[in-house]
Length: 125
Image 1 (cartoon, rainbow, N blue to C red):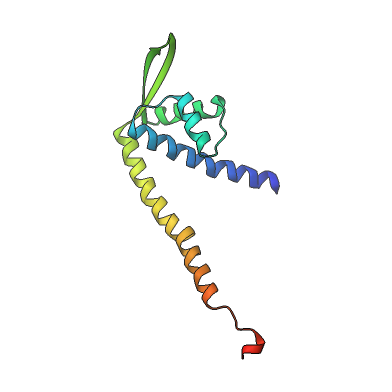
Image 2 (tube, rainbow, N blue to C red; image 1 turned 90 degrees about the vertical axis):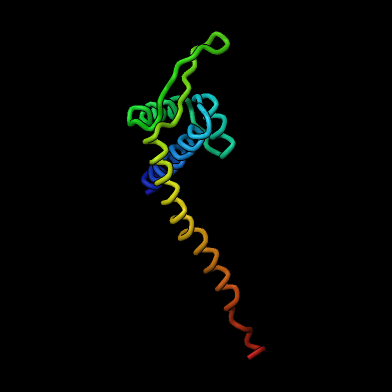
């Protein structure tokens, strides 16, 4: 059971990582090393062996484009979002807002309602 749960967690977080990548690639060109650093600020611990296949898949799927440049004598790949990637990001944002509303805001409303309906102690009846 724990192995299955761990697999699902990785699966969910993989989707969050892809959203982060698309979001940042929409703002400016990104490279893998910088994305690993950015994602680590959000609590994701990714190795290059995890992130680069995600970048390559997003590129192969038409959501990112890649441009190679030389920086400080090293070959760097910059990824930027495509029109299809922007469309996907917009759709994902819409679904994320809907999910946030149900999971987080509804939970907060239910917790507030429970707090206001606390039963009175027996001595106050």
